[in-house]
Image (tube, rainbow over all chains, first blue to last red; front, side, top):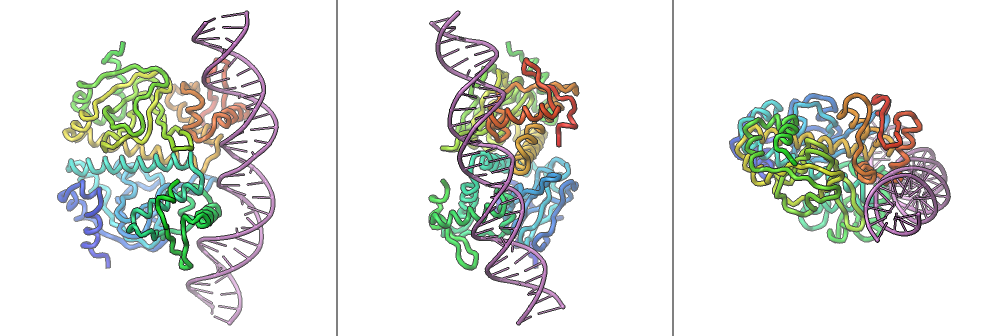
Length: 224
Length: 224
DNA sequence: AATCACGGTTGATCTGCATCAACGCACGGA
DNA sequence: TCCGTGCGTTGATGCAGATCAACCGTGATT
């Protein structure tokens, strides 16, 4: 079922692998394999030593951290084409978060050692990794600013708006991950998320079909 | 006044420049220079194209982002030996935050183009940059977890505890930046910060001299 | 010395979101 | 078919921290 060709096709389009170049990419893919995992499967746990670099091919992966006695949060969500936790692999340090499949997923598994060796050999791959981490850093900065300055409703609106881009401009948004995961990613409880959805709908910034499909009439009106 | 030898001595000790190796380091330092700036001087503004990579030699630099109609926050604080915003320099993208001197500072200015050229030439520097960004990403993850799961008081306690490490184990902590900057970095108002300080002092986790010096009797008791 | 501006502290009040609780609905298994 | 069980929603209440306001010590200006 997991055809190598499909995996190759998807990641060929990703910014990261384009920057890495075909030679390094081939070196990475040769000893790698894909895997299909059901919802709520765990890719790795906080504290594990990284054995693989995971690339999401289909579905969503959530990165969750927990603090003793304070529960868990979702630090980041990864969609198709994204690399989970290159940081830990690069640093050879234990993961500081747990990765969990939020939907059924297909992931490409690149052995960590292969990735590190190839980075040491390929200038392009090293540079691509630097840029990848730089982009990821900026995403985290965005999230910090969101948490510190914006209300729960605004955070949800911006979260959805970012998804509109990924789709055709049509305005139908895919939110395949469970509500609790979205709530945790946005730093609020499921209850608050539910109310925020209702409020955005009331204001006409959003429509929800009976099948659960979410439609955005006007992306510009969403982002405040 | 700014002696090149002192600058060299300081950054030689930093993890980043050690990993980069002496050759790349020399290439970086040759066309660079140091600058002394007063408190509240602006190093660069949100939206600027990066011309220099800034390395803090003395004092503290704050990275602040602002959202229209919501005010500003402090995304990160940088102390001696730290590189500000390598991400934007690497990506050749406009800064998404403003950098401001929070105390009088001495900074090393490395021309952005020189940094990019040297990265392309030196495998070690590229690798060091990758690791630097990986570490910075992890710091931001920590901050997100803090904001989502911990109370204002806990965030302050952990912030101070991290400073204890940097000093001799003695327990006297340097907090040279203005209270408002610390408050913004921790995602709270100056009023709440003040109350958190008072509460930690009341619990005996902290002592404050009349000169404003902050002393931590027991670092382990601070982190909850 | 008087004035002002500024940074930090303290007090009173307000509010956004968490928490606790109940409910509806879809789905799966006996 | 009936009865769980899990997930999302809605309602009522509580609280951490924001906001508004006053105050105080310090240093700069005149």
